[in-house]
Image 1: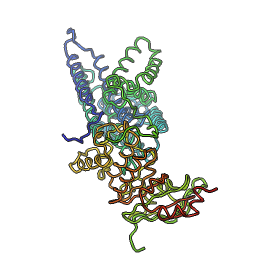
Image 2: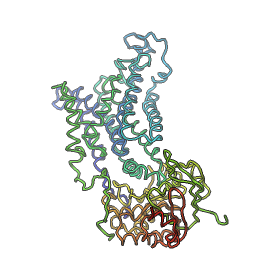
Image 3: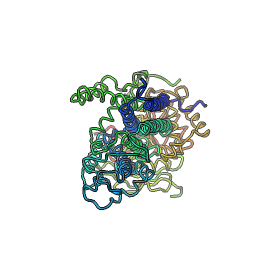
Image 4: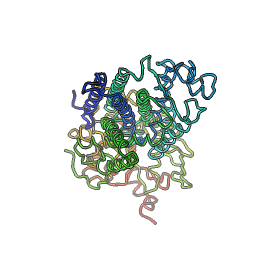
Length: 379
Length: 246
C-alpha cells in the first residue's frame, strides 16, 4: 500500500491457514461422527470428544502464547482461568440436570442436597440461564485476571517472581475448590451432566455440534490473536517484552499494555475451559493443579513460542502423544513430557514452527554487544 | 526571573543508602537552549537525568518543567509532557523493524486500546519519511533494528526521540563508541535539533562538547561546580583540580 507499512518478519500468515485447518478438521470429524456406524469413515464418540478436548487445550495454549510469546509474561497459572471458565459452564450444566439428579431435587444440585443445604448459594443464582452462565465464563476470569494483573504489573513484578505468583494463584484456587463449603462440589467437582440448551449431551448430534463450536471458537480466537499481534499494539507488546523501561520513556504505560493482553488471554483460556467441560463431562479442582498450567507452557514451547500456530500445533501433538503414551506406558508419561521439554529447549528453541522458518542470524533476545568501532557507515 | 524557564531544577538533593548522589543541585534551562553537562564519574549526571525524567524521586528540592511539578509525575506522564530521553547504551526495540521502532515513538496515540485499533495516518507516514531521512536510515527502513550497527542504533534512537516531538531532549553520552566522523556528524545533528528544541547533553568527550559550542555545566559530587563556556570552565582552577588533581 505504501512504502512504510509494516513489512515485519512477523506477519503470521500461517495463522489464517491454521484457523482454516482447525475449522475444517472439526467439521470433517463432526460429519464423520454422524455417518452410520457401518460406514468405514465413521468417527466414534470417543474420537469426537478427544478431538474436542484437544481443541479446547489448544485454546488454552493459544492464550498462554499470547502472554508468554508476545508480552514476555511466563504464566505458570493459566489453567486457573481455564478452570474458572470450566466451572462457570459446569454450573449451568448442573442446573440443566434439574430434578433428574439422584436426589430428584429440582432446584439444588445433588452435592448440595448431600451436604443438606437448603437453598442455592447466591453466586449460583441465574446460572440456570445459559446467557448468564456464558457471561460468567467471560467475566469472572477477566475480573480475577484484571485484579491480579493490575496489582502485579503496577508493582512491576515480572520474570520468575511473576511466574511463581501465577503458580500460587492457581494453587490457591485448587485448594479453595477442594473445600465442600465453597459450593462447587468439593473433591468431586461438577459432573453427571445431562444436556445443554435442551439437547442431550450424549447424543452424537450434540457432540458433533460441540466439536464444531469448539473449532469455530478456536479459529476465531486465532484470528483475533493474529489481529492483536499484527497490529501496532502487537509491536508495542514486543517492545514491552524486550525493553519495558524504554517504552515508559516513550510515554507508554507498560502495566496497562500488559494488563490488556493478560485479561484478553484469560478470557480466551476461560472459553477453552467452558468448551472443554461440555465435551469431557466433568470439571473438578484437579484442573487447577499447577502441573496443568506447566503442561500448557510445554505445549507452547514444543509448538513454537510467539507463533500462535505453534501453540495450537503443540497442544494437539503433545496431547495426542499423551493419549497414546498413557494408554501404553502410563507411568512413563511424565518422564516423556520432561524429556520432550528438555529436548525442545536444547535442540528446537523455536519449537516445531522454528523448523519452517529460516534461522535468524541475530537472536532478538541476545543483548547488544558493546561495539567499540561500528562496522558500517550509513550508506 | 524575567524570562519563563523551560526547565527549573532547584536545590535538589537525593541520597541512596546514605550516599548523597545529588547535593542541592540547581539547573535552569531557557526554551531553545542547549546545555552540555560534564563531570567525572559519580558526579551525579545520570541521577540528575533520572530526577528530571521521573525515574528517581528527590528527597528535597523542586523540579518543574513548563510549570508542571516533575516530582509528582511518573516516567510516562513526563514523557508525554515533552521530555525525551536518550540513554547511554542505545536501547531500541531489537525485534522490530526500524520503521516500527519509529512508528511507536511518534507523538500521539498512547493508550493501549487506541494503539490496538490504530491505523497509520498519512501524517504519520510523512513523519516516518522525515525521520528516516533525518537519521539516514531509509535504506534499512524495513530491516530489523537488532541487525543494525552500533552507530545506526544510536541514530535510530535519536530518530525515535525526534518522533516524540519533545520540547526538551536529554541525551546521555551520545557519542560513546562512535568513530570520529560519526561523533562530528552527531554534533551536527544535535545542533540541527537544537534549532527547534532545547537539549541537555551529558558527555565525556571534550572534542564533542567543543564541537557543540554551547554553555557547559560542570558537576562534581552532586552539585554544580562551574558554569560557562567550555574555555571558561576549562580555565577554572577548581575544575582542573577535579579533573586532573589529587
